[in-house]
Length: 289
Length: 165
Ligand SMILES: Cc1cc2nc3c(=O)[nH]c(=O)nc-3n(C[C@H](O)[C@H](O)[C@H](O)COP(=O)(O)OP(=O)(O)OC[C@H]3O[C@@H](n4cnc5c(N)ncnc54)[C@H](O)[C@@H]3O)c2cc1C
Ligand code: FES
Ligand code: FES
Image 1 (tube, each protein chain N blue to C red):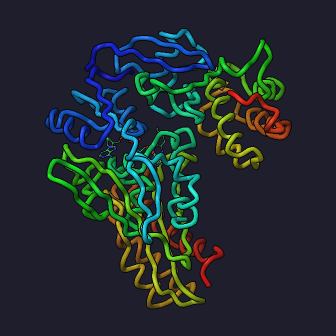
Image 2 (tube, rainbow over the protein chains, first blue to last red):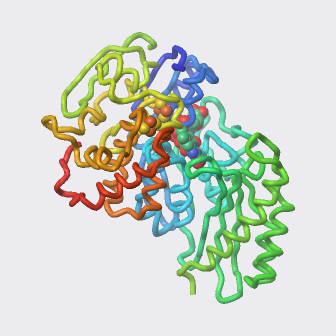
Image 3 (cartoon, rainbow over the protein chains, first blue to last red):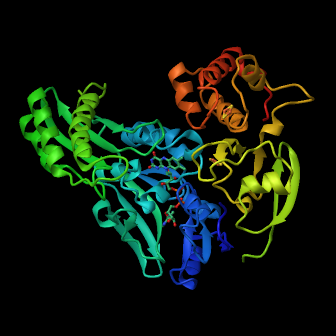
């Protein structure tokens, strides 16, 4: 199949892009990496009047560290994240999760902003934003907004972004140098979207856990933090029994749906198994005293 | 503007140009407008990888890019691999190790493997399997492809490979 007819614009600045979105009053679509939007156009599941291509907006791409915050431009390719030194050192969870996104040729084009704006519940980047308590910065004719993950993601493939609003930057606090992390997911084939994925970040010494962060992908309509499970680790420590209890609690906290890929029960089961694996694999890592 | 636009880029080292609607996919532009039919169109939604080409040094699906987006880019397609009638070492390895049967996936497989070996010149077998899973092959069962990429990596004193592509 081929895309339907549309008007095409490739603005050079965010301001021009916002103005174009306003001009088309909700009938235009932003084009980032195209790895989700182009298939929808090719299948004619999406028929926008216009495409506003962000690929020529030079200052939307880039990774820089700024006072303990890693600032990532929305148009930064997933491939750039994968090979970025700053990401490897300061956001090892993002580095690991990124390698699970599709395949290298998909990551050559796909962007972090596109992944977050697309809000596929099984995508890795939204889970990482959730686990690391990051924010996204947006621009619209009404100015700038800063949104946390739970304010951005509303439900399946739906965010709180307005039709004339552009996600311009992702801000992730650099991880604690003592933190150990892992991203565990299950998919039927490498490169497929996960059926369920779990991001885990643990700060602790010996058996003591001072901070645990657990976030989901694919276990419900939006990624969520598994706060009650984190608390088990933070209070009961990093013993086997506590890890098992936290994993059981994780499975109670999610509200998955059934679809052609997996039943709700199976996703709940995966949530337990993958939480346990993610925590154990994080703890097996060097780093941290 | 949904009217035709002029698209100019370099393919396999040669400057080319054409006019097409903005909705024209890069894969169709290469095949129909430039006559470079080596790049194959399979699923047209990013899954099969047959259409993979190198855009500014990185492998990408040409069915998920508009031709107009490639304006100003440097592109390498499978036609750019052989030089003076001599197969590229990677192609040689595919022939030697039965890395193809019907050949439909082969252009995408070669461009994917080329990009992969550039970022990972000394891969493990598991890494090769992961890399070539980016392209669907319905004939070979992948065994020959994995062996071909392995052989290419071993025989590949990287600097001896043609610098471009
Ligand atoms: C074969 C294949 C396998 C894949 N596997 C995975 C996987 O395992 N995990 C995974 O997470 N993803 C996967 N993807 C999806 C891929 O990572 C996409 O890149 C990503 O979901 C969307 O990013 P994009 O930059 O391509 O956005 P696009 O496709 O260009 O856009 C997606 C949507 O977001 C909107 N948008 C884009 N940028 C912005 C912005 N800055 N502000 C506001 N709105 C914006 C667009 O209008 C569109 O609606 C896969 C894709 C393919 C083709
Ligand atoms: S035709 Fe492009 S990935 Fe299948
Ligand atoms: S050789 Fe026939 S699909 Fe791969």
